[in-house]
Image (cartoon, rainbow, N blue to C red):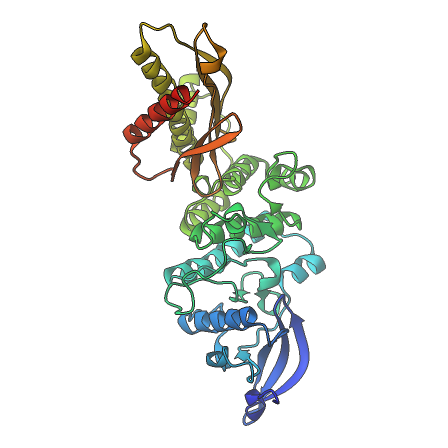
Amino acid sequence: MAVLKIWETKWKKGDRIGKGGQGLTYFASDINTGSTYAIKFLKEQKVLERRERMFIEVSALKILSHPNIPKLIDSNEDKFKDEEHELFVVSEFIPGPTLEEYISSNGIMSLEQAIDFTIKLSEIIEYCHSKGIIHRDIKPDNIILRNGDSLDPFLIDFGLSFNEEISLQKDDTPSWQHIGNRFLSLPELRVSEGNKRDFRSDVTMVCGIFLFCLTGIHPTDLIDEKITKPHRRNKEKSYIDKLTDFKIASINNFFDIAFNQGINDRWQTIKSVIITLSDIQNMKPEPDSEQDITQKLQAFKSKLESRLDYKQLEQIRLVLSKCNSIVNYAAQEVINKLKPTEFGTIQTGYNLDVSKQLYTNQLGIKTPYSDEVNFYPKFSCYSNGSEFVFESVESGKRTELARFQLNEEFDWIALQQKVIEYYVDGITSK
């Protein structure tokens, strides 16, 4: 059966404008008025997943009404389940290069220009979030600078977006399917247990865009094979080091938070990004003066303790320390209950690394009379990107003891009892 091209009754297709991952975009003119717009078609019209994505994109555009998001003009997205219909979407045409093309042609932005641009983009994202929409695909190719003006960016391509009000989604993304893009791959969008509908992923992507404006380099991953964050890598660092001297430390601090592996340790809202970048923009060099050493150190201490990343790292330290205390208490409690029989502990591999969000401790219970009843588990607590996992491995058998969010209420007493029972089961099964 012939494919129904309903769009031909209203629109005349012109030259191709661009090509994305899922669609082809052309100039389109209104048959009645001659006005120019953009019309997008799917590359793979027969693939249901692609058709669903176009339905999601159009549904998002129906919710959004912002001067820097192209206006929806026409679509037949409601026919996405009927393969006889060629799906299309007509939107406002925005003349100008993508951010990728702009940087390629004009070079990197100055710090002031990059901050102004990123704040403007952040305001668009803030509006989307206020409407419950997470974009999930923020990259240079999905940002158009109208007429080449860096202060007039447009955010496009909502095909990977998520919104609970869109009836198709629950989120229906399979747990094994990666979301996002290769511009900046985020752990929560690619691991099976990650939260693929978290507003904070958009916040991190915007920070990646800011780094791209300053360096022209795609950040790609939060850490590379050398466990180095994007702005700390040699090439990117060479650009950062050329920026205004008295602002470099603040910029590095901004990116240190932005590119933390755990989503709970990054910038938590787009508003916090806007405020911090505005503060950096408005910074003035401090005049040279003979300040009292005590005052200097006190000011430094206050500033350090007020920093978001410091507070979060302190929370992580407390959580990892709590896990260690529970392990030590549980082992000793079991030994006390075994008295007067002579049992003791044997320990190796202890490590508590806040920066890597990792705790390990191999703490066994043993008796000098028989190796057969020794129980020697290795405990670990680590971040998987969206939550902390507390587990143990003994004789090759992994046992998950708990999962929890950093800031949530958690029953530590129950966990303590669970670890005691774990030791008891381990000892008595020998």
